[in-house]
Length: 571
Image 1 (tube, one colour):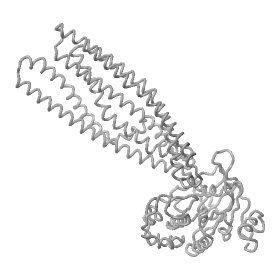
Image 2: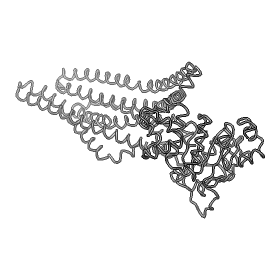
Image 3: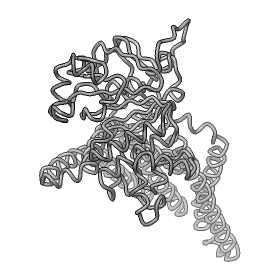
């Protein structure tokens, strides 16, 4: 909570001004019942109409001034809350970007979405409600109690007892409600995760006629979320009935005792009217405090979830390069081992070296560790053992941005943004249209871009839904090429391309990017046969490595794959 509250520090002055205005409004509201009592007890019996009109006009001015002060303070509170939430969401997003992929896996993408949206909204509501009602309501309660004690201490004790019981009720209920709100937020994470999965896999769901099963899965998560919210709401819902009961009981006692005292001449009519007004005002303010506590309960639960991200330690720090040995080649590994879950290694004892300008082919079945190997080179994950280097230096000793700007990458399952073709290739890098066109030509994408209604300015739907699989892949390849990378990684980037287009792409890469180091991950022998070095992976280990000719002679698995895919004569 302290971490989130720290975002209020730059706006302390504005908050202080808002508190002062709220205090002024509360004072004005507390004066009104005194003036009303004076009118009833003094001016009406004296039939002093001019004084009654003057006092009434003064009451109108005070009421208008109190309303104006409250409106001004509320607008200031809303502005501060929006600015604080904007900065909090900005820093939270930046922190998410700085987390390692391993940390992202632990938190989960759906939880990140929920924290960036729902949790920050709850914090915004908490700040806003506290500034609006959290200042005014306690002032009205304290001021009202002081004034009622000055008028009738005995009746004021009734009001004090009711207020104390109300505060006790609010405290106990809030303490019980916070854990339920935490559970409710976790249930929302599950709902968001299922929605993300359905949105990204809608075509597969429809193709396999799984709509019914997905509806049931969503309904289950939705019901769980509803139950969690219901439990939290059930606990917090006890606040208003109990406080209403206390209010009505207190009012009954005040009216009963007050009527007897007025009849006995121990209290004036105006005093009892003023006292009842203060009693109602105090209890209304107390109910306002209850609502503030509900917001604080939700906000505190969300603030803790946000704090988990903001205070998560950065696992991938830059290590000092003390007398570091310059490694051979532009990239490579030595006995690199890695496990996602820490149980069995997903990549074990991987070693290879690639020189600048050469081509590396990575071949292997699904789950053999091909993408894992690339993730270690990009330092998306850190190896559990061994050394991984790029540019002759251990990746752990390089700044993330310095390291990753050397690469152009097309990941398996990459996605396109909702925007124009140009925006998808430039990808917020401000590249010239000439550079984008050149990259599209090399990626074999220009031939279909030219046929689009507006060329580079044609709109692309989210995830490229209005494009074919081959067109999407070529745009992704063009995006990777447009940044003029030193090392280009293509992870199954030709899986949706026909053999003729894939061959044309490989020829264009050799022609247009002669000095670029190329890493190609594929399940097609034809895609890697021209590589200077080919790694054959099997169950997380490099089973063999060498050139196409060398592997045909020394690796039975590679030779079998080549014969199956290309025919014995083509090998």
